[in-house]
Image (cartoon, rainbow, N blue to C red; front, side):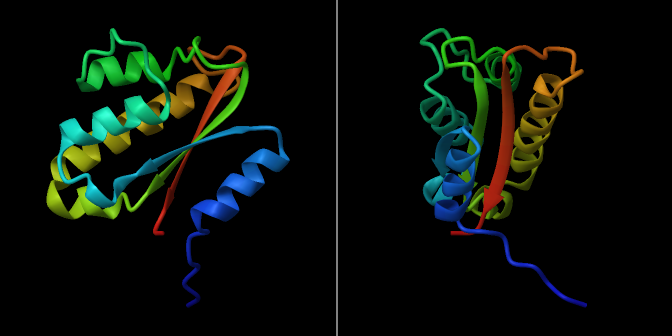
Length: 124
């Protein structure tokens, strides 16, 4: 069995830029709870001030992104395992919302428009 290492954030950013995507880095090394993670996602993606700081509001903002330019937006979550270890329930909830939003914005998704969302987890 071969274990494949996740690419580092620099490589992911370069790949995103090469295909014309916008990268947004979420540094999770100090994020041990849900609220700080939500705030960090909001900061990384420049959420509007009306962001409600809960999972429903996270989904709503992630599937809108109208304040960002059209195109692919890549959210690179560095060290997501910090939240996973500190608060597994919150990690699963946030991860689920990110996955749902990514699917909703994909071509043919329920909220597809001129913006797509790609979420990448990395260890560095």
